[in-house]
Length: 384
Image (cartoon, rainbow, N blue to C red; front, side):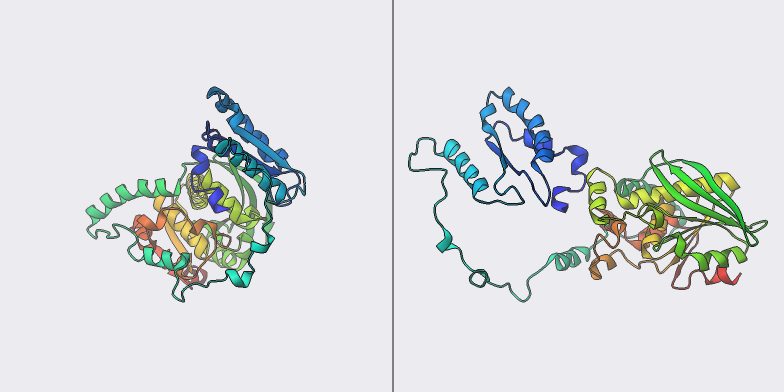
């Protein structure tokens, strides 16, 4: 849940520290023995008690930290047993001298209203999160103007590149490559790689090359590298070497189960999916540049890959020669306008990015290197 893993929260503290911060105030930690949703008592409770109990003892108030494990019914509930534990806390710490206050729940069945009785409706024009976001986005990004004079543009880029790096939490990673297979595919030479990036991430890549290639294309796609066969074939016929790579969240590097929850967790510990992906791509570009002595072109198929490529080129001013973007976003505001979800595109939900950059400003960070974009971006290369 996003409210339990706020952006950057776990980079500062975790729930064990937050529980310890309650000391010396009275606290009751209630868990269910067989919770069939989440937070089972044997998993969640020991870490909190282990962190908080010593702090309560330092204050001389160990009795103010209480725990309760519910066994009846023991599932995901806040039933009678759990409620009466709460009532006991209220009695002991707020009404200790009141004999008329007990921990026993009073009958209240007749007071419970039906769903129809509770339904009050909302105004027809009631705002929702999407509408609020649209209104807030109207004035974004801040300081959107980009100077046109070459010297002023260069100075602007020098100021904005560190800002983009800070927002996406980019990394300056290196690459250790391991060739895992090599074969001849028709007239093309093919080598499969595991690329170990920054000593942290392993991404899969395949390099295909004609005899005497005239340059290198790094290719990434929203559908993963297995969906790029037609474009790869056209680039090879045009004399280009192609390195097709699956970055974090794509193809073989895709998170199979609950990718949105993983993205939330990544952001909570101080990373950003977009920062990880663009840093991976920049590292691969530097690897190709060093290996073949010339900066590669980067091709991206789809709006997600196009944003990653644009950010990577904005962060990496020398190792990427050109961008070719197929169906890129025209604006980051499209994420809001199309009411997209985190599960659909985790990297498009980068905290703070739209506040300072939209797509036009990101393109200016890539300038003066060429950017070809649109639905037919690759036609030039496929035709040559």
